Image 1: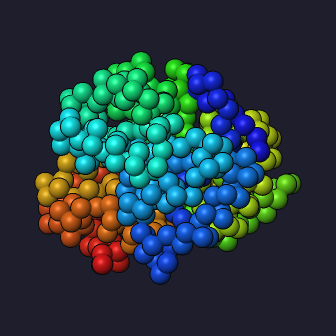
Image 2 (image 1 turned 90 degrees about the vertical axis):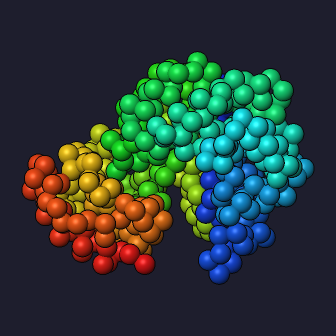
Amino acid sequence: MKYRSFGNIDWQASALGFGCMRLPTQDGEPGAIRENEAADMLHYAIDHGVNYLDTAYPYHDGQSEPFLGRVLQGKYREKVKLATKLPCWEVEEKGDFDRLLDEQLKRLDTEQIDFYLLHALNKKSWKKMHSLGVLSWLENARSSGRIAHIGFSFHDEFPVFKEIIDAYQGWEFCQIQYNYMDVKYQAGKKGLQYAADRGLAVVIMEPIRGGRLVDPPEAIQSLWKKAPIQRSPAAWALHWLWNQPEVSLVLSGMSAMSHVRENVAAAERSQVGLLTQEEQELVREVREAYQALSLIPCTQCEYCLPCPNGVNIPRILQIYNDSIMYDKPEYGIKGYNNWIPEEKRADQCEVCGECEEKCPQGIAISEWMEKIHQELAR
């Protein structure tokens, strides 16, 4: 296993971290983890040098933390750093901070959580957490020994990311969504550099975009075949990240032993600067080829907002474009129904035309809203 610096913390992280939100389950039930199989996967990864495990309060319907508490007993707990997250949406008052952390310590059957994150911060949740005094509480939790290192995971735009980092000198690490398709999405490349320049370790989530980059359409596959060194699409995505010195660790949510073996083997070959200029150019070609597969020429400029009826137009167009771009209709259905609240879905469009007057790309938004809802709503 290759190891990398972890911000200003005196510790070396394995290039690959194990994300415990996509463990194998029984009959598609998120809470029914196939524990023997999942334990074998975790133990294999740890035995091959993986030393960072990432979980969270809601993963696997709340069963990921207790599962880890059971399988990490003895020598395995000593070999890894354990990361979990405060579920900010569960916090209504200050007393909830201690209640939730104590519950997580019990679930994980540990006296200390090595890396503790505020989960999925965005502009709204950050404002709530900050107003409740979460930063002083985190300091106290660290002083008491219940947590060792303080960080946050993030889902919003770069200005919010910068605001959060600038608000507190005690951040030690952060977790962002970043991959070769999401260079400008959310925190993006700018966020990666901003955090690293301030001494934070940067943990990467969704390196293969939730599996979308694993089995590409033929047009993309033909590009990968041009490479002088042949790699799987997943390995290309991982090495593109490991190639960058600002990346401290790449998480992968693995759901089968084959994924673990492949990713561990890739991590063992990883290093900063591994990819040649020609290979980096090939990744850029792949990105552009994916983008060319989009049906709707939306640039996410958000001129169409606010919609008088509350429709989240850019996000809906993005979800639909992604389902076409990656040839994964099931992801479009899941994203639309799980991530777009009913009051912001496409069927709330009343064809007023206001958004179409503002759209620089001339997109027939109302027609697309009707089509998208028909195809994706369940």
